Amino acid sequence: MTFLYPGLGPFPGLSSDSDDHIARGYGAAWDIPYADGTYLRLARPGRIYSVGERGECGNHLSWEWYEGTDRHFMWYCHMEDLYYVQPGEEVKKARPVGIVGDSGLSTGSHVHWAYEINGVRQRLEDYEIVQEAQVARTAGQQRIIDVITVNMNQRLEEAKSDILAAKVHNELVARNINLAQGRLTVLDQEITHMVQLIAEQWPV
Image (cartoon, rainbow, N blue to C red; front, side, top):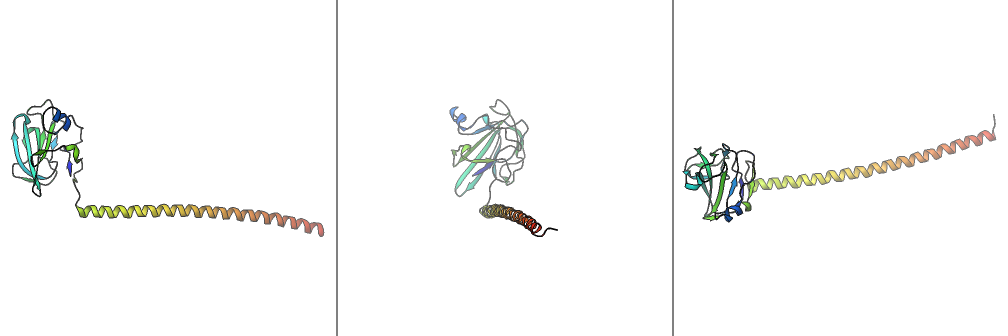
């Protein structure tokens, strides 16, 4: 499964990973030190579950989606008290839903990002996280990409073969030119010799 980085801006790296949180007695999560005021988007489309202040988490936003019977649940903490979505709203595009802040139990501007499946905390390190808005390809899109890739590789190999054949051809042409030049040199020498013989036999 692939997710987007939460911030609508360059990814600044992690200030705390899953192991750090687990070592401090919390569940697996990431802390990302985005600058205060950075817009946040959902890491994956879903239905907004809750927004508002929640203890140490501060101003938070959570959302959910289902795959089969499995409930996937994500949330952000330490946001500004300003939201562009409301509970129950379906969000399908990577648009702003809130703003990075420093609310709750926080020592600086950042977003706390956590993920659960059926209530079991997940390590975000086990998933692909990308910056691009295109999160995942459909099976049909992937097949088209695979066909194009195979075709391009075949054409590349054909081009390499053509270049090699042209190189060999050019080498043969160069060799034939050298042989012809050699024959012309020999013929020129023979003609010169015959002229000398004729001159000696029939002097003017």
